[in-house]
Length: 171
Image (cartoon, rainbow, N blue to C red; front, side, top):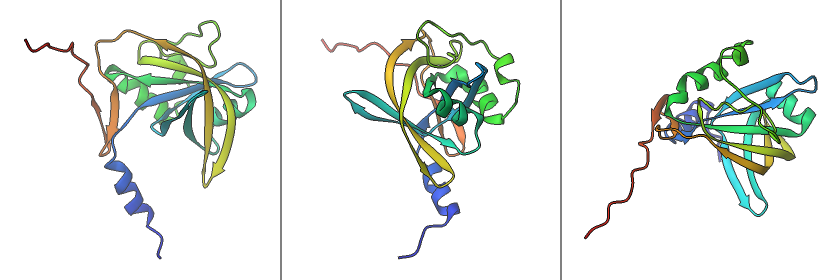
């Protein structure tokens, strides 16, 4: 059986819309690090565990591996500029956004762009190709109110899921 080309695989994955998050952490010197991430998945409910995939050479991955802790900021539709900024590699990204570190936070929270944040302990990592899969046990979840629905990425563009509307009873 022949292996699929990178072009075919990218086309396949581009057709699979997914949510957008920014993974954040503090490096061993306390400097904030972060990167846009669309490779986010729930793993199990007990203990609550998720996974993210991070590129080798990323300062954010280095921070996660150094501190064994990170936060996953799940973005709302108004967070697209933040997603683009953290995907750009700009060295001053934390100077250009509002962020906070609540008590017990495992990484910076981006309250103006995130609808919720999961604070995680990195309990396992596995290197695959040019990425590392990081498994995080979720220690806490913080919600940030927003009128926007979740930010999505697919077909090489951003979109927003419509915000949930109250159920209408038939009657």
